[in-house]
Image (tube, rainbow, N blue to C red):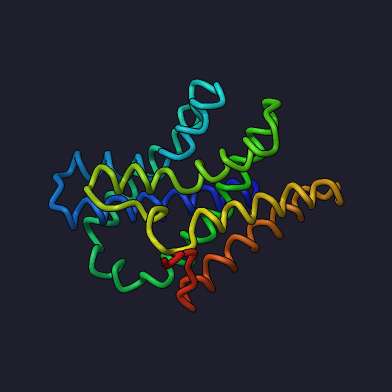
Length: 200
């Protein structure tokens, strides 16, 4: 099992837990919580695959993703209070996850022959639209529509990856550096309350 797949599974778990916890806060039942966890975890990748014509979508070929969502559901019900105390750790894994999903989505889009610009957009879709679907279904304004720097961090990481791919043939290194760009921008944006808000 390679490290990218391991990070992908961990990121999926964290996204799923965040979805289930949101559902629990909104008094969803067990089935509703499972659905919210699922769309949070794989919604972005599903939407990307549909848009680029890759069907059946990726997670349907690997049941580990379904099992991960079920594990997230169980953990969230059994250890809700403990998990809520680990929000800082969850945030770190979430940030790693959006960096990874951005680059994986971008790479998959390039592989089907679409342009770099579309690839960046699909990388953003992969990383953030699971959360958008979660927020819409739970009647919350999606994070990417608020002041926080979120999707823009993914765009920056995607651009860095495309530049590095022109300069280096070491794809693994390019992936790691680009993920770090997303991570650092998102982390410091939250820490120092940066935003792209334009006041008039």
